[in-house]
Structures are given as structure tokens and as C-alpha cells.
Image 1 (cartoon, rainbow, N blue to C red):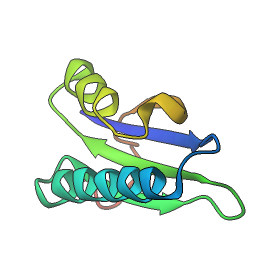
Image 2 (cartoon, rainbow, N blue to C red):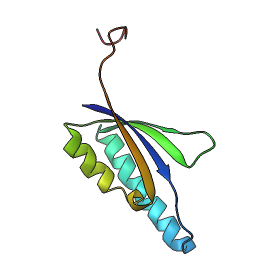
Image 3 (spheres, helix red, strand yellow):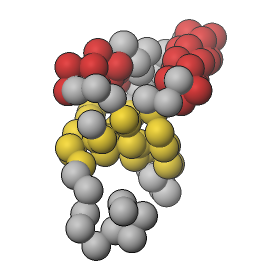
Image 4 (cartoon, rainbow, N blue to C red):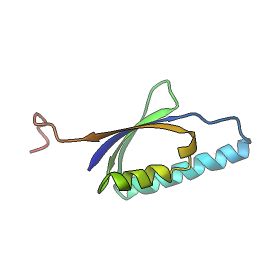
Length: 93
């Protein structure tokens, strides 16, 4: 199943070392999921500390598990949109 996910990050003031470590953990986790094929695309939202990503996962439960385990999850507002094939997509066959 494909899902489009918008993630808006709102980090509080924190120790610079803790922030650096948190961002490193987030990057490592997201890149692991990208290499594994579940995190298909990620785009920065221009002018905002946000991204729009596409996930290809077995179901909503798996997506929930992935999002819940993001190191930045406690500091995010997340919007999930399930996706379906569009009949006019020439690549859909």
C-alpha cells in the first residue's frame, strides 16, 4: 500500500548535543527504511521544517509502526493520505 505522509517538525529548545544526536538517529533510521524500500521518496517542503514522503508498506499498521519509531515523532505533526493508482497514469500500465 502506498501512503503520502506530510511530517511537520517543531523541535523545542534543547541541548545542542542532544539535538545533534537526535537528528543523526532520525537520518540513520530514515535511510535504513529507504534502503529497505519502504520509504520510497522524501521531499523537503520549501521554506518549512517539513517533508512529504511516500511509503510503500504492507498496511496501515506497518506505517504506524514506522512513524511511531521515528526519533523525531514526539516533535511532529503528521498527516497521512492513502494513495491509489490513477486511471490516467501512463506508467501504471
